[in-house]
Image (cartoon, rainbow, N blue to C red; front, top):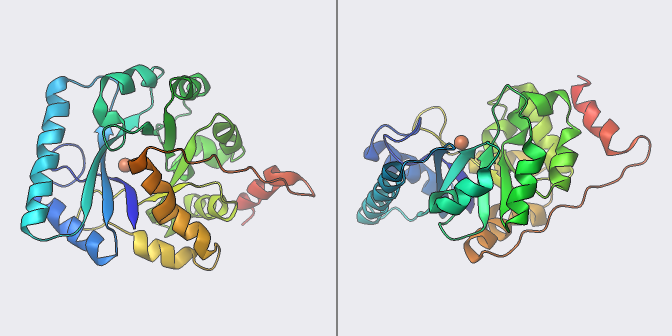
Length: 262
Ligand SMILES: [Fe+2]
């Protein structure tokens, strides 16, 4: 299985504090059946070249250590880019912002509690420049929790969605959990990520999350989420935008509103 969103580079962001902690996290990943993990450390608009060099040096160190300890998880480079207006320019200049270094896929995040402004144009610019933007954990943002229909606009702009496995399991609250499950039921999600940060507490959780959603989605879709779509990042081929389903009796919007009917 592939896990496309994790913090695995030690002493870099709010992820593992040591190389050993990262290795221990990846032993847990291996035990869950994860064969490929993307090391998507936090990056922002300003990326000093020394910071990018430090990232790739520590990534290589991690790969070497995994090989020495015979941990069978391949680590791919990447970032979780904090939203800013000119993400397309940042992505052009820094290979760390393109998943696997050379692909056209870009994982980005919004602020959790503030509504971002101008994101329509920023996503549009990424698309115009040939990139495939992936929005990290849409179910966690307050502005989407308050108005889930916003997700339709974001999909129509051409962004793909990555849901956190921790959200599926209820680790980020009931609203995020309901939203994550609803997005999955509607097949609006293209990728899953553990968003693992450390050995204890917030580590890999792909397998328990898959076990949890087996009764709401079919095996074919699970295969898409955990193998077929992420493999396209490595091959740099396009993951199609999910079709936005229409529903009778009020449509998709009323369906999403039901999330708040407890
Ligand atoms: Fe993250």
